[in-house]
Amino acid sequence: MKTYGGGSKPSIAVYSVSPVALMEMGGVKAMGMPSIMAFHRELGRKGFDVTYLQIGGDPQNDLDQWFDGLRVKKMPHWTLPRILRKSRIFSKFLGLPLLVISAFWPMFLFLRAEKERHNGRVVIYGHLAPGAILASLLSMTMRVPNVSRLYGTLLPYHFGISEQYPVGKLRRYLNLLRYYDETLAFLMPSSAHVITDDGTLGDRLFRALRGPDKRLEFVRNGLDIDWKGVLEDGADPSITERYFENGWPLVVSAGRMIAWKRFDRTVEIAARLREKGVNVNFLILGRGDEEPRIQEMIRQRGLEDRVKIKNNTPHSEMPAFLMAADVVLLTQDYTNLSNTLLESLALERPVVVLDVGGTSMVANDGYNCLTISLANVHEEAAAAIVRILESTELRYQLREGCRDWKGEGAYSWEKRTEVEVNLIKSLLNNENYRCST
Image 1 (tube, helix red, strand yellow):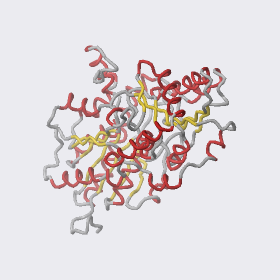
Image 2 (cartoon, helix red, strand yellow):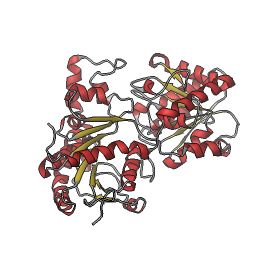
Image 3 (cartoon, helix red, strand yellow):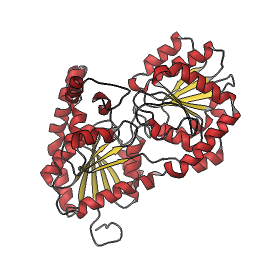
Image 4 (cartoon, rainbow, N blue to C red):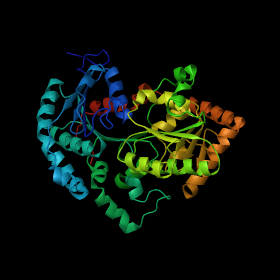
């Protein structure tokens, strides 16, 4: 029998319940949610027996060949008829119950056999709101520990936790019902919660809803890039030349193209700079539902020569594009404490970032980046970009700030996963497997 850590005990088995593929964005492999992929890869490397139980998204069955100790199993479940899926109301309020009800029994049968095979040394992880809810139900039924794993959440903003996005008292409680899936992910019984410190203030909402005594690990993502090697290799000038023929400086924005990521601001900032006679190229790296609208904005503003979108970019290629950037621009609502910000700082790139949510926990104006305010995003961003492009001294100052920050703020996923390795061991060392309520 496989053992963990060279001891006599059977290996620890981690079963992840998730509504998305291990790495998925628009059907492109190795894109999107890199933190999910990195977490499971590192658990496999550390000797755990890891099974990713996928109840949604496109199957990626070859992933079990990528990492030792990891397998992906597609679980059966029901979905709403296509005509009902077209309705947001039906999808939101019927889709989740249908998924949970239909996936519970096949998962229970599978996990019951796995629990016996591993002599009970089993932990169930529930990823994102649907996975957390289902994992909690399975945990209570099987009497094994479970972890609710949330990769940030917008619920704190709907609840009025952020002063920048105020919400009336009645509205905040109505929002808990409106976004009931995320509310349940916070409230369902669990042995522990792990919430990503991504600037969305999930720790504050957790304490407001659950109190100070419940177990919470609030940790920032690791960096899944070899930043030292990338810095040694330097920037590849052919990347800019591939998309633009004019030789102007390059501003890069990156992220999933969904509404709150606000890539419309990138287009507007490009238009402001053109009006000021500043010649700058903008490259948006991303894909999502907002892409057609942003493409139309670019066309209507006549910016096709200086604003382009590149989709289908695997995460492994992101460092090269960030290194090619003269400025990295991040103007998302709610938070900009994203993988893109962390990677840009690690690669010592000049960053212009909108200071919302918990972004300032990493982004320090004039030290490792330039921050702009929500009240005047477009003008401040345009001015900050010009400041960086025109001042060699400022670029040097920001680079030195990035280097200082890396000394304590940058760490690998191997280091980051140690938090959850210790969490998993502590849960299994506790003979009482009942969920904390």
